[in-house]
Structures are given as C-alpha cells and as structure tokens.
Length: 605
Image 1 (tube, rainbow, N blue to C red):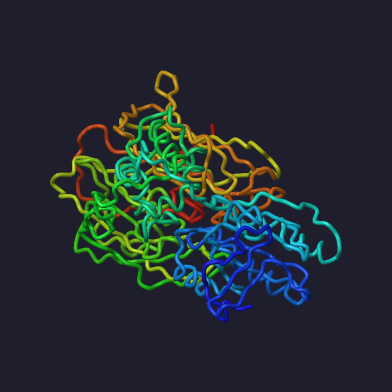
Image 2 (cartoon, one colour):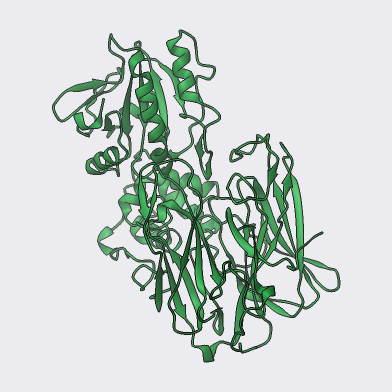
C-alpha cells in the first residue's frame, strides 16, 4: 500500500487490552497489526527518521513488500521515537519512496507487542497474533560495516518458510541499529539536570559532529534531541564507542582526543538512568549553528575556497567508483597553507577524500618540498580539518593544480554533493618549518583466505632530525589493528600509537599534543593486522585472497605521518620539479590511487 494513500499519524491503541495495537489514519480508518482473513502475515518494521541503518534498510523493505504482497503479506512501518514529529515522519516516507504506511507509536504499544528494541527491526505476526519471527532484515548493513550484498537473508527466508508451512530456521535474530528510547519518570529533585550538567558536556564533546550538515548521523543540539536518543547514548558511552577514538588511551597524548573520562561517562549514564531531567532550560544559551566563527568552517574563515567544477550525483544504492577532479586553484603565486579543510556540501555521502598536488603541465601528482610531501590533505570521518602548529605550514607551489579523489557512498536516497576545499594562508615570512606528509606503504599485499590475524610490518628510516606532528593510519574492511613504533638509534623501541580496534568508518588523524623529535638514524615501524576470516562482520568475502587495490573490497597498508624539520629552517623558493619527483600510480589512502616514487624509503622488516 503506497504511503501516499495513508497519512502519518500517532497510533490509536486499545488501552488496557492485551490485544495487538490498532493504528488509525487521518481518515479515521483503523489498521491492525494482525493479518485479516485474506492475509497470511503482517511484517511490522520499526524505523527511525534519523537512524542511518533505518535509512539504508528502506530499499530492502520496499523490495520485500512488493515481492510478498501477492502471497498475502502486508508490511506496516512503525516509528517509535518521541522526537520524530509527524512532519518528519511524513517527509522520511516520501523521500525514501516507502511502499507501505508508516505510523507513530506514541505509547510504545506496538513496541511492547512486538518486543522491538531497535530501528531497524522487524516482527512477523500471524493470524493468531503470534510473533513468528523477530530481528534483523538481513546482514548487509551493520555498525560501521557495509557489504555490497547481504550474505544472510533473514526476513526473506523467514517469510518463505512460514508461507510454506515451516518454522523459520531462526525465530529470532539480533537486530543491529539505533536503540529505542523509552520514557522514564524523573526524580522530583534530581541531582543532575540537562541544563546544568549535561548540556555543557554534550556541547564540548558531541555537538561538533552531531549537528545538521556534519558527520554525525543525528543532531544533539537540543534537550529533546538528547533525551530522544538517550538509550543509544547510554549504550555507546558504556561500550566506549562514542565519542569515537579507536586508539589505546594509555599510549601517547593527542590534542584531538575527544574521549570522555570516567567521571563524564558516569555523569551521562546517571542522568539517563534518573529520567533525563531537563532542569531550567530557559538558562541555556541558544545552540550554535556553526562549529566555529567561520561560516561553518572548522578552521575559521578561509582565505580561499576551491570548489569542485560540478555537482556529483550519488545514487540511492549500489557501489560508486572513486571520482577524480583536476582543479586549477588559480593562485597568482606560491601559497603557504596554515590550515586546510575538506568540506562537502552533503557530508552524509562522502566517506573520504584525498587532495594531491600536480606540477604545472604534469599528467600525474608529485611529491614536493625537501621533505617529500605526498599529499596536501586527507579527509575521512574523524579527520575533516587540519591546523598546523605556529610557524609551520605546507607549501602549494605556484602554478600547481589540485587533484581531488573522492569516495562517495549511497545512503538510501539520491543525493548530490559539490565538495569544497578551504585554505587559510600563512605569512611566508613567518614560516619557520615546512610540513610534509610522508607514507609507509605496501604495494604488494597478499592476505590469505580465512586468515584471522595476518600480520604485516613495514618501516622507514629517518634520514635527518625531524619533528613528528601527527600519524594517520589507513586500512580497509579487513583491517583489525595498526600501530606505529619508533626504533631509536640505540635499538630501543617506543610505542607511538596503538589502534587495537581499527574502524573503517572512523579514521582520525592522530595529532600529537606536542611535536616529538625523531633523531636521525631512527626508524618508524608500522604494523598492521588483518582479519580475513568469517568472524569479521565487515569482511566482504573470507574465501578471497586479498591484494592491494583501490576498492574498499581490496586492501591497503598506509602509514601516513606528518613531519617538519627539527630545527628552524626557513623554506626557500621551490625549483622546477625534476624527473625523480614524478610519481607512478599505486594504491593508497582509503581505497584510492596515489602516487609515490619508486625510490621511497619503505621496506619490509
């Protein structure tokens, strides 16, 4: 039944009755969750307006609704979220082309009847009002994982079995998605309130990403936002998933670490457990609509903005090949970059982007500068903007072009994006050290099928005294862990960064709180472990031998690190690039091709 024929309204339920809930549309027509005499089953699908996995699930639900309608199966959508308004629900249904009606469940009667805990989650109801299957739709999408196609068709298989008179192989499965928040009574005199205790913490640690237009899939700018997502906040804080920081906290000090300490975690969880008391909301300042004072730019107002030459259209689903854009910034002379930020106009569809530099007249990108910088910047979820320490900057030589390589990902509805690059310039006379991004890379990865802990190590020797500013590891879907170690000239080793739980969906650039001196003769070791087994939920195919390649289903070993000269070394004008600076194409950051010269100091240990 198309959504256009039914208005989205609140559920009207049989109060005090153990019977399944009935839902009433704006025309006063009642709709039950139990099959009628000419129906076999009803599939109840729980969806949330801002749940990213719910958005991705709609296409499959539409497909199944059309497939099983001729066999007497009716689909009904339920939105159990208090914070989702009727207008938002109506817009969600329209934008996603929902093939069945979507109702709101204000009193959680449908949630209680079906035993639902998450969005998306489904329940199959028979004529006797029994739940015959409950759980996930399939296993294509998970938390931080996305397969090209599902390997387990749970709902389809359950319906096929039931229609054939058989019991499903699994009557329940674990749904993955956004936790449904249930109202709790608040204390008469609460110890913790949103206005006094929680709002400042959310503003400091969460709202930078969780606001419209940013990488967070839902907004946390208001009390209603935070209360509406309280169950999910409690879960991800308890599991140490949010704020995201995949690195081990006992190793190193990083200025961009957003982690909550134990006291902050306890404050949030205790406030939620006590019923999410608002406090005096009239004393809250108006929520900021911008991360900084720069019209939405994290780096502040840019001195220059370079835009892609055209919009790119992202389909609702499928796999989008990497997109390459060669752009002339049209700068009159050399520029020194103090801060840089990649800013999509549609953040929801950009997984990552790398920006390389091309000499005038060259056909490929090139390293530049005395320290051999391989790229201008890299952007991924968790790494949108970079500001270099005072007196340090990256060079953009006169006449050089910018090569953007962008990985777009579908989100369930057609989208468009026109990515921008913001640049803040440094005064050339104030630049004391040139910054370079270097790379330790494996161009010939060979990960055996079903290998659960395939270890790869590579290293680079430090030829002169340098300052280490940041590290940026990059793997793909089989990545399990990554670490950087410094081998001192005396042979002793020091752990610089340990990422024991690699997350393809969240890839920070780990910025040291203070630059670290790398003495000449020391060696940086990078070690990655890959899980190509079936136990890895993100693994596209555990039977495949995995090689280095540009697709997410291939793999990479990329250990990026930013350095500058240890001593003040004011840069001199850049000479024309020599043939040795021309680079050959290889696989690199986040499933794209970069260029590194064949004489790179990268060797297997």
